[in-house]
Length: 130
Length: 130
Image (cartoon, rainbow over all chains, first blue to last red; front, side, top):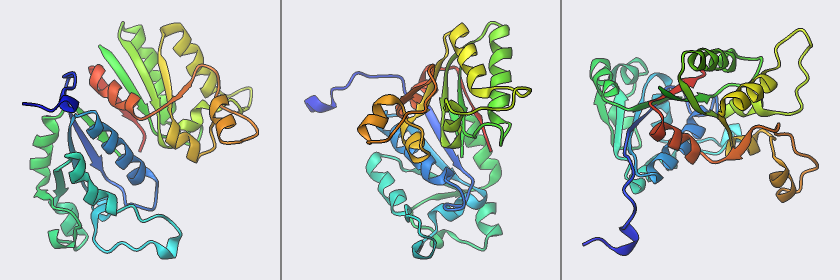
């Protein structure tokens, strides 16, 4: 039996994929994209995130922004789980090209090849690329 | 088809907003509907009432206002992105204690939920930006 506060009107659920391609502090795209991710999750949509190209740096462990005077927003990625955002994918080639491995990342991810990511994208209703 | 457009880049610096405008016009001419245009990232700057481009150049802000009026397009500016970049409507200006407001009439300030809703409601949500 559902609790009364869970008794929401069932709306349409679409598959939203967010493709994060840019490093976290060079431009504002990563930070502002994260805001869209959280709102989309609040709308109870099927949310997944892809990190590719320099976007893999967004979830690199040990970020310290003291020297650049910007807010370190990387802890937010760890909070995604609390919003039921658990489908995080990383492009294998992008990691390798940057000398990174899954152990360098601050969240649990699934590492996929470009071909596998392409299949996954094909399956989405909305793909937003930031 | 019902389209939503996401514009992520500012005016004159980047072609994104021009491409979106040309797309919207072409889509409408073919009998499609443009349900909403959502301005995000630097795209919020397209909604400024204070731009005075040279007379022999296009006026991006006004072109959108005209197109939106004629075709009943909902033009939404992300409030968080706008506030960061100094774009305020009259209500926000008063609330934040700022001297003036600079969102052009025809654009409305709202939250990212409007972008997610466009993703849910529209057959296609197209991104214009880098």
